[in-house]
Image 1 (cartoon, helix red, strand yellow):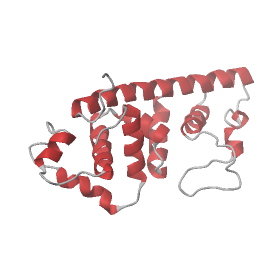
Image 2: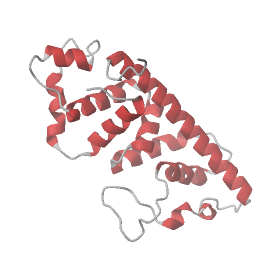
Image 3: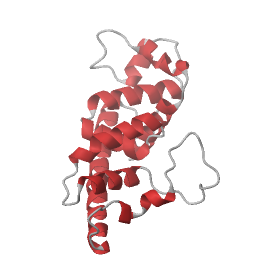
Image 4: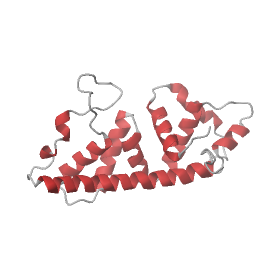
Length: 192
């Protein structure tokens, strides 16, 4: 299975993890003792002989590989930004909050990280999906994030600072994921 980019692989792998289906564990049948650290997805498929690999198998394999190889802050940044699995998204948000150095109060940082990971979605007020986290519109009002009532300009600067740090983490995580997935041979070589 080949992916067009690290972002495509990450999004696909995180989406596969959100599917509640026991068949998604089938990728583990490709595991061979002794190949765990050196075997790529391609070599595991070749070693399995005639056994075909499905998109779900590949996505779950990529998920497991990235989860084990990325440092926790990179993994959590990707999960918080791209996952649709409610519990894992919430756990990732909670893990990121203490990593953010900011002059803002802790409540503000917590709300800013949450708002970054779960952006406000227009038009979902009357029709909410059970498959995604939808926060009430008032959650995004920064007046409730700062109990000291600092100036609007200050709150906007704090929020941008938090967002910038998180986007930098995501960028670093995607670069590292690309390095890992290139080494595994699952990214298409775009240079022709």
